[in-house]
Length: 331
Ligand code: ADP
Image (cartoon, rainbow, N blue to C red; front, side):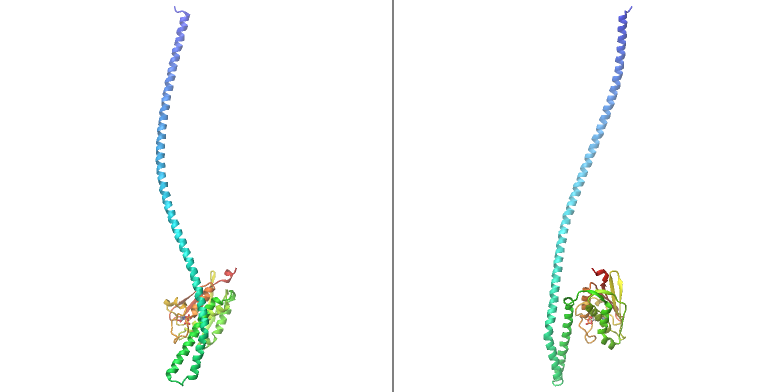
């Protein structure tokens, strides 16, 4: 018969066994969980390493790209610097050339003025003495002498005309008045009045439409109209000359036109006729020095505009010129 002590010892032993079994179970669970966790951790670590490797690869590629792009940009920058330096040098050279040109133009104008002004006096002497020779000795020497004296008189007169035109050309800048509000109609009327004789002799009809007020020099503007209308009358065909002066607005400027029904001009001469001493006809056909349109161009340019011609041989010519609108140019 087991004693109470033995019984309680057995019971205690059972409890202990049960506890050990429970602990073993628990341990098993813990162990499994720990292994699972360790596996997951290992997996995560592996993934992380892979990601890091991937990242490293991308970083390297990116660094290569950045280095290549930086080198490219540096090269482009260097090229740009070279281009800018070349451009600056070209601009400086251009500015220098423009300065030289302006100076040489001014010198040339001064020279033209001084030469034509100083030549006038001796030329006047040559002209008056050849005229005196002609008056006093015409018919008293032989026929050749009459011819020679005639040529000399003619040459001296022509030279005087040329020099006078050259002088008026250079005076356009040296004696030009300050531009002020000017009725172009008044300038045109002065021109028509000055041309009265040519108009009467040729039977020309000169019509003048409404003309605007511009910032201008009335003397020069009337000279401009006089040269253009005068040419319209002079270069006429068989018909009676008809000249029409008009103006219309075109944005910031006025466009003036002087249209005639004369002989017209071949297109290849449209530019040339505005150069000094350029003529398309002999003096026998039409008198002149070839300075009229050069003077016109200088006047128009001094007023801030431009001048050109449209024409068809046999169908008349239209000379166009622009002048900025007064309200736009006033300060
Ligand atoms: P000029 O009349 O003294 O010869 P211009 O400079 O006024 O000088 O004219 C230059 C040339 O342009 C003239 O010789 C003429 O051949 C031509 N020309 C000018 N105006 C006209 C016109 N209205 N019709 C035809 N030809 C013209």
